[in-house]
Length: 280
Image 1 (cartoon, rainbow, N blue to C red):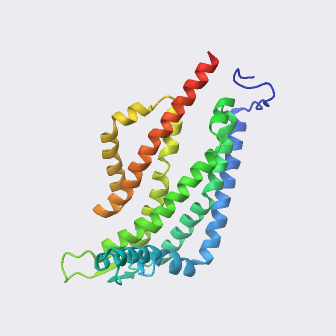
Image 2 (cartoon, helix red, strand yellow):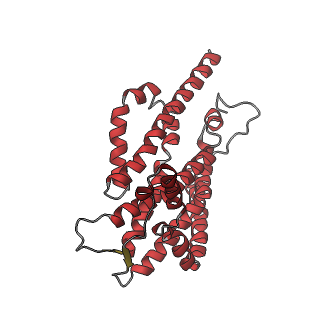
Image 3 (cartoon, rainbow, N blue to C red):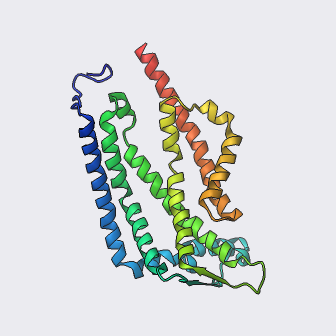
């Protein structure tokens, strides 16, 4: 029994390497099955999903545009904040374009909807290998990771997607050029914005575990703020379309998450110091 494990805490059964592989295989099978179930359901509701989810941010009745317009009316900036019908068409220039995007959309929706269960399966495989104190300090990990992922996805969909579409569809370098976007470009851009936001919002969780293993301290994070800001801007440029507005939209919340992560890191250090003082 490990030294940090209480007497009434059950011992984990010893498993061989092949047993671990078998256990991992079943966790992967269950995760893939959950994704496939949601993917199949999404596949059969394609028309509704494309009209009410995928193409919704391209219409001025989208909630984000409605709120911006109300803000513009209240502040006298109605001309700047009230969106007008977007002057672009969506086309499919490849024979397999629509079918490929239907599969892509179904898979992404399946993964997003199944993410809490998928991460719970991953955590169920990792958790038995942790010590008692590590398990105790990481309680709520599934809820925290899933919540941050969902918040990031919602931010990407309701903030980044409509504003990026607004900027990119109305941007023009010459009246001779008309905007006619391919369906693969529209869907790929939205997936990058939504899925990228969900992953980048995991920053506090990453900082928490890096602090637990001693790789990061709050002092280190405060000292290297300017380098972190540069890194955040680079990340924002990678996961967003090549325009300053989208990059700023993802960089600002990421920097706020960085500041929150400093407080989380400081809390982990304080708890560690209290435990060491109690043990001494």
